[in-house]
Image (cartoon, rainbow, N blue to C red; front, side, top):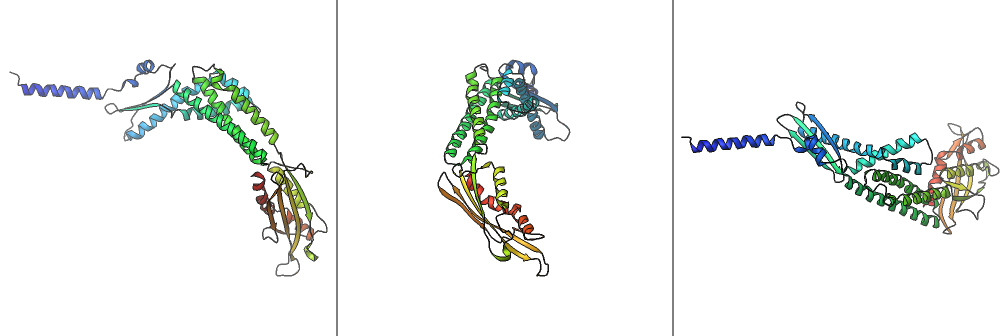
Length: 374
């Protein structure tokens, strides 16, 4: 007669074997048929990756790499959808303002990759599996189209609000006479709009309501873009500076020039132009009045001393007056500065070189440019 205890042991052994066999069975998502039925392409974007664990390879590291491969595969599916969507061409044409079409397409593609990659962190289902018996490793990533559409819709609103805020701030800065800062704000808005159009492309590709123009907010985006471009044209070198220059004599050999050479006035005018300012000849038209008073000082006469070299200092003092606030906003004096002298064949040559020193120009610009910008 069969011993009951032996029978129980056999049953337990069979149960253990069944459990082990079941534990070694890969999950359903590793099968393509299951993925196709459970994650239909009309509703999901998916990415799948498969490999065999190499000898000595760390399981966690291998699964992490494979997981990224699955995410990349899913991202590429999103990108393929975007590239095949007609709205991408439409919005690209709307915002193209220069450059070749090929450059525009490449820029759009790179932006789409970045946007799609960012969105894969939102409500993405990521799974991995390691089959110890076979050494097989699997990774799977999936995200619902509706979740992506909701993400792009939110980001579209956030960026449009951000761009509109920047434009509003720029208008207040213009009223305060801070036109350079205003232009910088408008440039921020323009950069944000690049992201806006990228989200429009993505939303048009993944949303079931892609044909709904109000959902894509094309009119709002287009109006804002036109406003930004108009403001940029208006603010291009719209900060007007009137420069009042004079030269003073210090007496004797200190005076390299008998009259105002106008050298440093031209140097500062050029520097201001390079920093988005416009030089005006009308005090009434100016936003700022810059007063510059130059002079020279002999540093060495070229005759006495151990190393006789003729050198001259270039001196300058001045003020900056803001006509919008009716206040003096900056004053500076650079006299016998160790960074503002040069040698020359004669006094005029040495002083001319000194006034053209980048260090002297930079010292003055550091005193006035922040006040013009802010």
